[in-house]
Length: 309
Image (cartoon, rainbow, N blue to C red; front, side, top):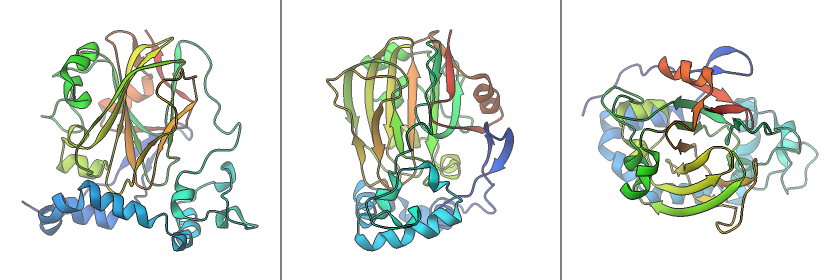
């Protein structure tokens, strides 16, 4: 094990501003310790197990955790006026969340994030930083050369994965500062769903550079969706360090609508991965272009994330 000195800043493209920006990382000192120091690497397997993450997540439900909310909002310039207030009495919306987790899973106010309705456009299913590939095969690597993103590894079921061999892929990384609910990108039904057990490593790009198999080693919840406009999709929620729980708020046996909430992550940054059938759709042009440069594209929920081919 070797320490990594001076880890790089995380640069991403913000579609709303049209500018490249530097990410402000919550818990950056801990991430750097865990993945860039010899000591952190030595105890990493302990800190990234499921029970440590669940225990930390439990603390975010403690009544005293509400004291963290206002400083967090102010440090990361979160536009709290865009969100529904919490259940704690207070004049200032920053003080209305009873716990940090209640703030963490806050909902947008009605109308703040409209979903595209054009059939050929796939709306963003999470408010996140995206990378995307037209086709996933052994020529495509992310985030570093030498690691393949293959359907069988991401889905964890070889038989199901055959449906998505050579198909398009989107990876949506949610930071702790982001909205942490995820949604359906189209109308449809759930064909299958299952859990793939695993670790709880960070999905921060710094962690991915050090441990490039995180997406296939972390715990995942997989749903196979039949959609009206984009064929079958593999919708994969990836657990991450300090994620106390992945909650499915939509019933598996009920049809879903475009933009309807599918579920949410309790405390911690995490990731949603969507895979498609070969030749059915492709990521939006700016996402593909930035991905080729090794840069993520930040989108608002409901904006175009892919188009039907």
